[in-house]
Image (cartoon, rainbow, N blue to C red; front, side, top):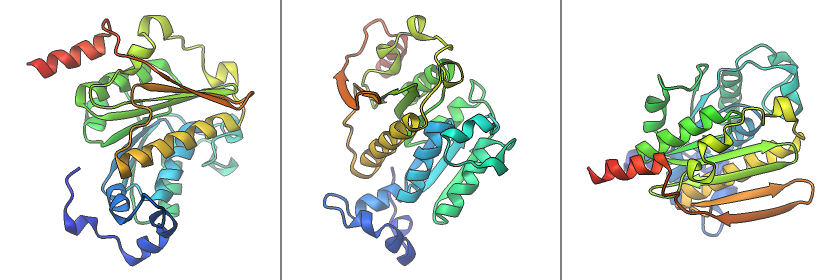
Length: 262
C-alpha cells in the first residue's frame, strides 16, 4: 500500500472511535492508519460475510467492497446478522452496505449485486489489498483463488457447514486453495448450508476468526495461517491448525510460477 501523509491522518472523531484498539500493546496509530488505507473485497454477504464485514467496518478498514447476487430470504435470518424481516426480498450486498455506512461513516463501502464470474473477477480483485471469501459454492471459491494467485492479491478463505468450519490464507507464493483441495476431487456443490444445514453460530465463529486474521494482516502484516488450514469443530470446541505444502501438480501455482519466470 502506498502511504501518503495527507491520507493517513485520522480525525479526532476517528481517534475516539478506535481508541480501545489503539490502546492495545502491539497496535498503535500506525497500524490504525494502515487499516484506513486498506482495500478489502468481501465475496459473499451471507453468514460469514455479514459478520466479517461488520467487524472490519467497526475496526476501521477504509474501503470495503461487497459482492453477492442473492436476495434476502427468511431462512437467512437464522444466522446472517445484518438482516431483519423488513429486509426480505432486497439484495444482500445493498442492505449490508447500508448497515456498514450507518455503523461507521468514516469508511467507504461499495456494493455489487452481480454474480462474481469471469466477466468481473479480474477488475474487482486486482485492485484489492486483501480478498475475504465466505461464499457457499465451490465454483466461485476456485475462481477467487485462481484470480488472487494470478494477481498476487492475498486471500483469506473461510467456510462453515453444520457444526464445523475451516479457514486458510493465500499470500504471495504460498500454496493455494487448489493445492489443499484439488478441484477435480472436491467440487461437490452438494456441501452447502441449504442442503446440509448449519448451526446459527458456526458461520459467525468462522467470520470472527476471518476478520481477526484480516486485521492482523492489514494492520501488522502478520500471516499466521499462510500455507496452513485451521479446522474448527463446534461439537467438541476443538481447533486444529495443519500445515500444507504447494502441490507440484497444482495448475494454479504452476501458472503463477510460469508468469513469474517470463
